[in-house]
Amino acid sequence: MLKKFLVAFTLLTAVLSTPQISYAKTVCTQEYGQPVVCREEEQVLAVTHEPKETAIGDINPAILGGALVSASGFLLYLSKRKTTSFIRG
Image 1 (cartoon, rainbow, N blue to C red):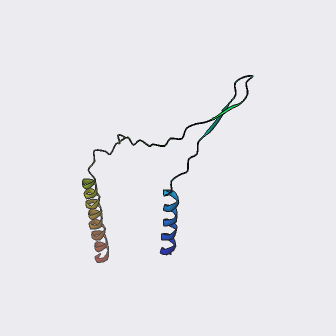
Image 2: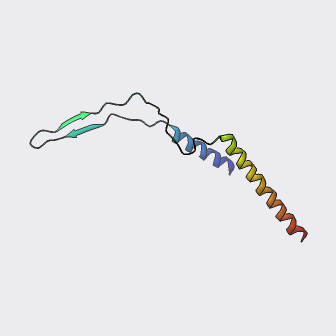
Image 3: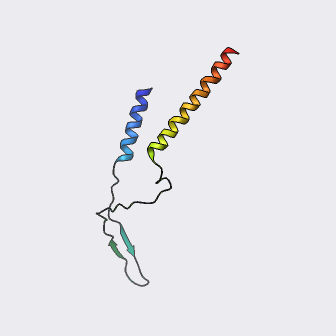
């Protein structure tokens, strides 16, 4: 079961991570009484990366991870305390 899940997950990841093929787009226009004129738009060869402002940009990942670990430890403590009180009572 786990092997099937891993194979499916790997294939899904491979399919989603492959680059998409982009072709030049052909645009055809026709003005009233004139013949159809088709032209190909130029393909964008260079990609520019610009940083975008995000809402979580100011959060330190180490602090967020520590908070999540602390919260899970607290929930584990509460769940153990609950189960021992049910066993004794």
